[in-house]
Every structure is written in structure tokens, then in C-alpha cells.
Image (cartoon, rainbow, N blue to C red; front, side, top):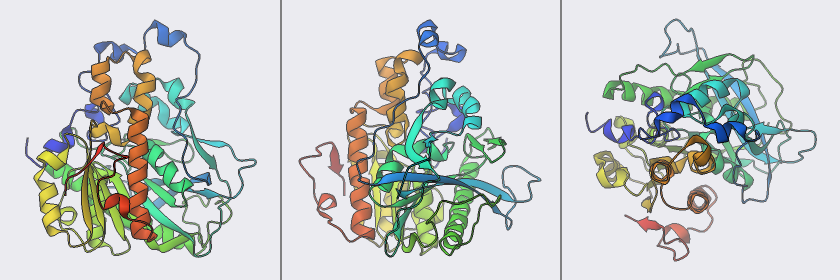
Length: 409
């Protein structure tokens, strides 16, 4: 296995979804293949709980179906256009009459459950803090915008614990499903598209996936401009929430991502000046654009034994990057600490038969709530500093309130 692929293949996930970090480890008990045990089957149905956002704003959200007719689908021959789903999270003006958004769309749940080993009824009943279609809280000049790209094989919802917190603090956050790279994507009408990457995840396949993701992201940026101008880019022209027109401050756009999603943020920043700041959460940089750097701010955050210690692409990026930069390490974390697995697996451990060691391999030994809180704090501090010109002290020097964060360089 070559160096370019090795960091992406950390076994914090099933082989069906390499590098997303949300799946089960290879060491997960064989009993999981036959489903939960008797105690789990007898428990009452109920969803997992996501930690509440810390910001003052109520949350609204809406999903959009986007079709890029300038591209054919790179993974499924014969598809005449590239189709993706995005989810927009935003500060809401009024929640009355708007229902909580499911963590995962119902049609995608069976495949997700089979792939990742979490009980379908639990996932089906897991709710976010966003209300579907709620009107947007208007702000003079619009809200700064952030994009989120998940790890390879990850769905757009797998960063919800970070995304919701940013939206509650006044950002509009757009999460991207990279269709046929994502484990499963449900489109309007109930059509579900599952992962279609070649089973042999070679360097060439990963590089192609990185290029597709970068093209997806630039297309999304184009559609956000159309949306802010008052057009409806949804393929089905479904009704949009009141107040979206003019709500996006397109002069202040940032991007963050986990694993290959973090590499995607760096690649798009290199090629597209619309992105003003970026964050890579524990991901190998894939492709020349990703390691090429830019003149704009970029934050790198690694797990305790992540790419910051062993991945030469981080050094290549660091040498090439000309803008503000900082590299941090979150102690006692693992690759899967940086997505929603850190919230879900501790709740699921007993019912799906994870041992304490297996759980630690999935989410690290740092307390999950503490891990989430620290990630939220530093992610928001970075974007507040570079998109809102606020503060900056937290990223200037080690803070005794957060001894779990190491300043690497």
C-alpha cells in the first residue's frame, strides 16, 4: 500500500466506507453481523441524542437536489448529469409549525444501518436540532457561509454535531453529499443511490474521488450564488424557506471537512478564491491542488496518532501554504473522533456489543462530550477570527482551559 492511501485506510470504519471514520472497526465483534442481541431487541425504540448547540440562534434547515448538466456522473456510466444533495443549516426566525429534521433521511436508513452496524430503528428516530423549512433569521449584509465535506464514504449528515453549533452561532452551513462516494444518498421521491466506487481503493481511485469532490464543491458555490440572488436551484423547484434570498454573505465563505473532506477544502481553496478560510480535520492531502496551499488562512487538526505525526502530505502542504496557518493535535482522539460517530457510538456500545477497547478505537479515550466541545470551540474560533475578524487569542497560544489541545506548529 502506498503512502498516499495508507492514512486514508485507518480502520475506524467498515471497508465499504473507507476513511469516513463513522463505521465499525475491523475488530468489531462478529456477532454484529447478525444484528443486536436479545437485550437490544427487547428495548423500546428511540433515537440517539445529539448534543445541543451552544449558540443562541434557533436552527432551520432545508435539503436541495442539485443537477450539474455540464458533467456526467463519474462513477455510474450512462448518467447524463452529476446529481448531488446538499443540506443548508441556518439561524431561524421562527420554528412554529416546522418539524425537527431527521439525522438521516428515512429511505437511506436501511442501507446505512446494514453498512455501519447501528440499529435502523435508532437511526430512524434520531433527530437533529434543526427545523425543516423554518424561515431564515435575516441579518444586514447576510450570514457568513461555511461548506462541509465528509470523509470518503460519509454522508452529509455525519458532521451534524459541528455543523449545528456553527449555525447556532450565526453561520449558514452547507453540507455536501458526494453521490456514489457517500455510502447512501436519498433523492426526492425516495430514490436511493449507494456507494459505487471501485472495490479496490487504489491511489488512482482516491485521487479521482478527490477531483470529483472538488468539482462538486465549486458547483455548489455557483448554486449558492444563484440562491442568494433569488433563484431556486433545486432540480424539482421545491419551495425554499422564506428569507433565503440575500441571506448569504458570499464575501465571507469558509470550508471545513473530515478526512478526504479536509483535503477537499484545501484543494478548492487552492483553485477557487471564493473560499477565504479552510480547515482539515485529520485528513491526508490528496492531489497537487490540495498540497499546493494558498495565501488564505488554513487550520490543520489531527487526532492523537493522526496524519500530523506520520503523513508527509502535511509537511508538503505546510511548506507550500503562504497564508496564516496553524497545526493542532487533539489528545486521546482517533480518526473517528471528528464526526458524529463520537456522539452515536458511546450511546450504542452496549446494544451493539462493543467492548471498551473497541469503543476507544472508534472514538478515542477522551470523553466524547469533552471532545465535541473542544472541537466546536476551536473550529468556531478559527472561522470567527478569519471571517468575522473576532478575537484570535485562542489560536495564538496554548490555553490552560483546553490542555487536550497541543500546538504542533
